[in-house]
Length: 487
Image 1 (tube, rainbow, N blue to C red):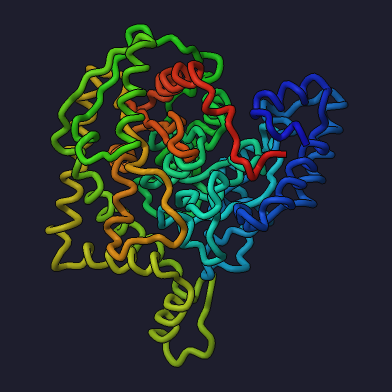
Image 2 (image 1 turned 180 degrees about the vertical axis):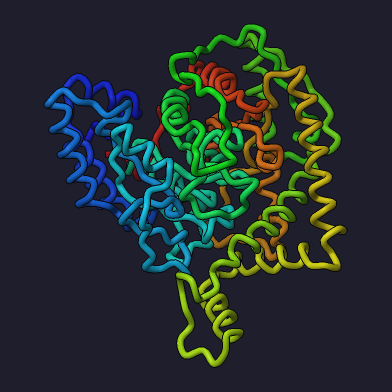
């Protein structure tokens, strides 16, 4: 069982050296899932037999001298909105209960070609709408660092599974921070790449101009390896960028000479302790490591949250229109008319938060309010993009907190839904502009993880890895594990 404490690259070295078999490693993770999933509820589906069978095949190929790619024999777990042929794809919704994907998403094809073993599907907020993983139709996920707290959302199952050593690396999707926020709450590295860097083909859409597949990893090096495997143009996704994919791992250094970071003053306004103190301490440490950090003003970025909830809700209402009780998914019994079929299928199939966002999206797209809300939001979105591009002509990255606070307690929701949405305050600007961002551990407050975020220019992932790696090398935050996962 000691092997599951290792990082992905450490496990790869052990497999390559013959000190470990893929089947043995998969069994260790399955044992950990059996032990902890009843408590943490990170997995919605455990692909036990499929994973063991695939691991045996990969061991035989290795013994015959054949390696498929950089992940040969290494396990991975995926958010339950990513299509894997023959596995469920519920998006944590009753609407898709029983739905089995008939094909592989492009990222799943890439993982299989690289030799990965898929351990199963992970819990999430329904259709990726939420910031806590309390909106799953199959029950909430608990934070391994404090079992009475949320793991973050919407990719909370992905973060909790990795943090509790139930997988060595996991994937999620990030529409407004849904990888970076749960990474922050679970002492992990979380990457939201540039829009178009990784294919979305085979991922159930939430907000089509905002969604990106993201990586959860224990450290920056694992994250860089996975980003390299997943990135690249895809003929099945016209929004992917035909840009060369660098070897993120080979080019990774901790050199901060000449690096310039921008700290927006607005990020500090209203930020409370202990987050503010930890962030300012991190800034001083970056200066000590050789980087320059300047405070800057941002005029439009503070509007990103309002723009996000208009654009994301509008796109969600459009994308979820296909769930009508006719084509696939839940169908109401004994409808008396087509209207009754639509209405009852959607009323019975969707949960509270999904309905809220569909109603908001339908409202802002309606004839009387389109210009006042949706069209205005698109104009402000352009201003935010232009403002960030101006910042990146002078600075390598923007530094700030990943979240305003640490994870709240389960069920401790405010009566005002706006308070819940404010959790996304620092993460949504990257999605609005389509630029990359990375969250990484910056310390603890009363044993709860706290996180720093870097936002960069388009396709600046190598520089973000470099800056985050320099900080990681100077600390031991990533070597700490939640007590519940200790073996």
